Amino acid sequence: MATSEELHKRRVEAVARGVGSTIPAYVDRAGGGTITDVDGREWIDFAAGIAVTNVGNSAPRVVEAVRAQVERFTHTCFMVAPYESYVAVCEQLNALTPGGFEKRSALFNSGAEAVENAVKIARHATGRPAVVVFDHAYHGRTNLTMALTAKNMPYKHRFGPFAGEVYRVPMSYPLRDGGLDGATAAARSIEMIEKQVGAENVAALLIEPIQGEGGFVVPAQGFLPALREWATAAGVVFVADEIQTGFCRTGDWFACEHEGVEPDLITLAKGIAGGLPLAAVTGRADLMDAVHVGGLGGTYGGNPIACAAALASMETMRELDLAAAARRIGAVMVERLRVIAAGDPRVAEVRGRGAMLAMEIVVPGTLTPDPAATAAISAACHAAGLLTLTCGTYGNVLRFLPPLVISDDELGRGLDILAAAFG
Ligand code: PLZ
Image (cartoon, rainbow, N blue to C red; front, top):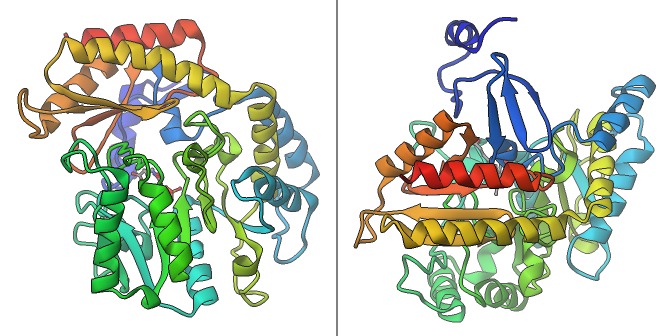
């Protein structure tokens, strides 16, 4: 087998430079909590493929379901000749997502595609043009979702012009907004919407209940409920982007549940199918069914192999109670992260929920972001066998997203490496 170094040389000659990778190691296999490269080097996985393999890599039920489906049929296109697993995934999403009202779902391939479709549905149902998003938001890399995303480098730089009718308002970011309470932070955003956009022009308010790429920003308590309440009164579709927070990651099936928020529409992807590409929009039947027949779709959306994987993943989450696992993992991690933070003035804050945790790194004694120190700590982790990711508008957040089936031993070893990387 070729070595990682050999593969990297081939990659540079074959793969477009614009597609980056966190580590220059080429994967041979991956399991519950580890990734092994072609040279036999092992990393403890605190990335889960960016919050995707919540059930672990090659989870037994997923492997079995995919294998069985591949043998029956690989693709007919649901828009041409439909099949049961698509319907079953929609039934489960309708039942699992917050909100006791009648729901419908539609399936797509990627998170960005789900977000695009949520906007299409909200615009169609309301007849209004504007979409409101937040500082630090991340919603994807397609043209509309680049417009919805806040950060220029690397996502938007020189890729414009962007889609119109997108308006950005402040996020509740307790570390950096002077600790505004949720209601006050929401009132500030709402006033901006009303004065600068006009509520009656707004189709959708789109928000990540805990921001992902933007820095694992957890809004102050009460922020999301206040926005939800305003959206209801203003006839604005409240869309929760749970693409990174969903499927047990935060210790509930969905992060909105933590404050009892019931979105009108939810966008889902990542953790839904154990690593196969699948995404969804789930929400109020009256909004979803407002769209004319044929108005939503795509060749591969709800591919039968991805649907089989999703059914197996959701079954695994129930069977192993991965929401409880996320809470347990989170408790173990937070304790260790707080010890690190107490001994290192570069750590401004430990935050997150369940198994979606982060540390924000600053110049000691200030709130000035320190992306260089963040990158150095991350590189030390990689060198010592722990796969971590960074994020944040300022590139100064270390984030931790272990698979929810990681063993206690792997988790402990990962945290030991992390502690050592802080030196
Ligand atoms: N919404 C909240 O987190 C994807 C992006 C990685 P896609 N986040 C990882 C990268 O650098 O491209 C994401 C997300 C939220 C939407 C998306 C987009 O999902 O499946 O990557 O399109």
